[in-house]
Every structure is written in structure tokens, then in C-alpha cells.
Length: 456
Image 1 (cartoon, rainbow, N blue to C red):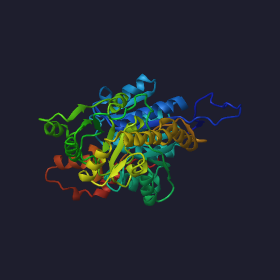
Image 2: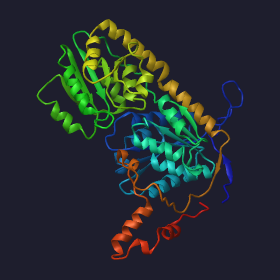
Image 3: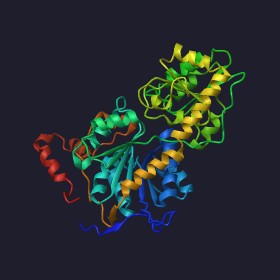
Image 4: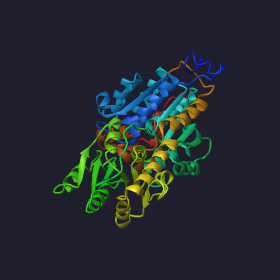
């Protein structure tokens, strides 16, 4: 297939402020998952990251997979408001994994970019194989701890340790801990970098506690990882300390339980779910940001709270929290959700201690996790990855057929299970060929008949 190579990048980006020739800024495609009412760090990050890429490259397209399509996608709405090109696939109408891969490839081939950021989107990781064959560069993002999160553990295994044809060019981990896990599992050939998710530095700032100490949790209301039931109980215990109140913000499957548990008392309240642009104002009305998760990657809500001047209190876990917090310097790391957590809250009622931790928390957010710092690191990575990339007009593969993975547990994580086309066909054959066993038509022969065009 003739690729007719053409240089990728924004026209006119040839001279920098010194009059020297500047390397063209590579065009970028960013993939993201979304859902109706989504809240949380990865969704807010996708929007802010897209805006940063647009301001820097001038050539960004965002591809969103969202059940219900564009009408349910907050990411798409935000991108359109910022003048960023966006396309949305309604995953309720495209449940087959290969269909999602083919849609992503069709969108990319329509306007090829030098750098394809798969982010955490599973079909985008698979699509990277064909994009690399056409000269583009592929990059994935690891947002969580693979020791506890099977989805990310399998992403690492399949796309860093898999046969070379599935290997991505680069992988970004949000913490050093996650990066080391990725490097350990990698077969080589993929560049693994550490770039945390960042935060805006807001104008709204917390004020020292006087008569009351207000705690807040912001995030998904789920049991897995976040342990929202245990956190709710910890807040109720903390509220028995004179002058302590607490707020829970977010959305998730455990919301009915949280609301039922909070009935009959007024010290701990559920405040609702808020879009990313409003969270800083909500946070600034509190004093302590609390996270008692079993595991994290790099918790964005924690960094956002610190940027507002909140003192962080986190349960000890080996990934992001330890990289953000120095115990007793810019926050507290506690050993449990009971006595040690309550002792930390008691100590934070002291305005002088709170003020010292708050100041250091703000300094940490500004110097290490601000958008200015983080997006500069992304710019350097994207520029290096897209250097000298040449992609041209060509067509996507006619048809994609995946045989594996099929029923592996990691597909079910975060409701991302998608059957492959072969699996769906076999199910249909079983339903329609009454009395005829598949063993009479060997699987090897069936797969050969359905194999994709090898030239693709």
C-alpha cells in the first residue's frame, strides 16, 4: 500500500522566539472514555489536557467512547466549547471490540496525526498496531496501581510484554511506583515515562479553622479501591469530635447506601456531584481533604485539594499518596481508618499546625503538580515522540479480527467487557445450528476463514 508520506505538524511553526528554526509541532489524537454524569480525575484531566495540546499544537482531535453518544459526553461538550475537534462513538450501538477499534482507525485515517494517545482506552491500545504500521506513534497512559487493579496489570502485560506487533511506542505512568511496575513487566522497546496528572492553581483558597474543622472527600462512590463505606463510617466517627463536620462529594453505585447511612444526623452530609470547574470552590470551603483508598495511581482530587490549601489526610498505600505527601510536613499519612485517622483529625484542629501543613501542601501542588509544570513535560514527550514522523493519505484495514483475549477478567473491570467478533459469531452459531457441534467444524479452520487481510 502506497503511503505517499507527508510531514505531519502545524504549518507556520518554523521559527521560535529567538529566530532559530523550530521543530514542527506534531499533530495529536487523544482518546478518552466518558459516561453520563462522569466525575473524577481522569475525566477532568482529559479535558484540560486536550485544551493544553490545542493551545500548543493547534492540531488536536479528541475521540470519545461514551454510552449514549455525544449527548451524554461532558468531555465532548467541553472540547466543542473550546474549539477542539471531537468525534463520539455511542458504545451502546458498537459493543463489539473490533467495531470500536475500526471506528477509532477510521477517524484517525480520516485526519492522520503524528501522535496517537490511546490514554486508558482499551480498543485504542489495539488500534495502535495499525497506526504504527502507517507511520504514526502510539502512547498509552497508566492511571492506577497494577498490583491491585487487574485492568492496568493486563494492559501492561498485553501492550508492553506482548509480541512486538502490539507494543506501544511509549507509556506514561502517573506515579514513579506505577512506572517501575510497568518497566519491570516490559519486554523492552517501549519508553516508560512518569508524568503525574496535574491541577489548575485556583483563586479560591481555604481559610484557617476557627470554631469548626471541615473535612471533605471528593471522588467516585464505589467500594472497590475507594472504600466509600469505610470512609463514610470514618467520617461519622470523626464528626463525634467537637467542632468537626464532613462532606462527601461524587457519584457512583454506592450513592444510595451513602444517603441511607447519613440519615438521622447532620454532621456528615452528601453534597452531590459537581463538574470539575466547580470543585475548587467547593473544596475551598473546607480545611482537610481525606482519601482512605486501598490503592490509587496518583489521586487528582488530593492534588486539587492541596492546591486549594487543604491539608491532606491519606491512608498509607504504596503508590501515589506516598509520592505526594511527606507525613507531618505537608499532610498526614495514617495507618488505619480508625484510631490513627481520628488522631490526625484531632491534631488538625490546631490552627497553627493546620496553617503550616496547608502552606506546604499548596507549595507541593504548585511546584510539582500544576498544569504549567505537568503539561510542559507532556509537550516535551509529544514533541520527541512526534519528531520527524511522516504519515500520509491511506486507508484503514478493511476488517479486523481478534481472537484473544476473550473472556479474561480484566475486560470486566470498570464495565469495559466487550466480546470479540469471533466470540459473538461462535455464540450465534451455537444458537442457530441446533444439534451441530462446533467440533465438527474445527476452530482453527473457522479462524482461518475469518482471519483479517494479512496486508492490513
